[in-house]
Image 1 (cartoon, helix red, strand yellow):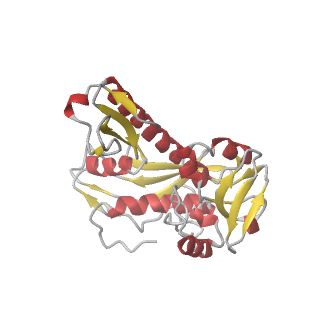
Image 2 (tube, helix red, strand yellow):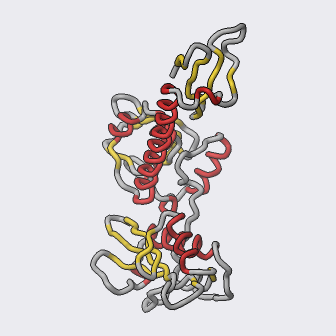
Image 3 (cartoon, one colour):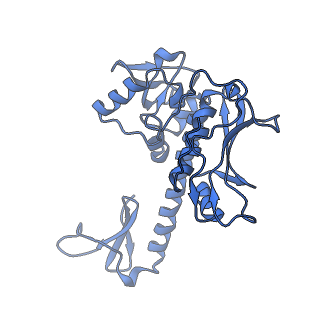
Length: 289
């Protein structure tokens, strides 16, 4: 975007997301004012640019949220769709260097480019750049990436930075030997908060929903929908609040599922929520699973 005249003395433009002003005349027309002068605060060009900057911020956040949803859910995404949105800077920032998988695990690699035909340029875990033309790709949740360590190493060595936290998203692998009768995890129970409102506020600030006496996260895993729930207490009967047990339900169930029936992505995301809520309080000495 070029510079726009704002009165007879200044020109204004968006520079790295901020409205900046410069002199419209003089020996150094490129010299920029660090902040828009007070006399321009209400100028229509400045107001318009500020509204546009706010829209760009919202658009970038929406793009990041959508790509995160695709990744957490490992949903198939048409390659032609990626090609269509790639010219948009906000979409490109969210998609570039995300790990995608086309026809099989051997095709996993970092998305580097998408052209008009729907073909994708991908940097594989072996350091080879290949061109793929799949109908769809997935952006796997990191708990599903068998070569996660190699991909992290390659990203660090190549200076790749993801716009969506995929490679370094905290993951939890479901342990072997779980009691078939077990329906709850207590590892992150017992963190104390000064009030239910503080605990619920932390949950919502992290992007989770509060439903009654639980913080919940709805997770898609291999075509199934799981709801992970962490108890947060009763705001009407207790002055303080404590994180409770972590359980999972499916779409059809009113009772907690056996832990052995919880999918790998649902397990990891549920544990991620429980750990994040636990980290915000004062932990007790619970040594549960």
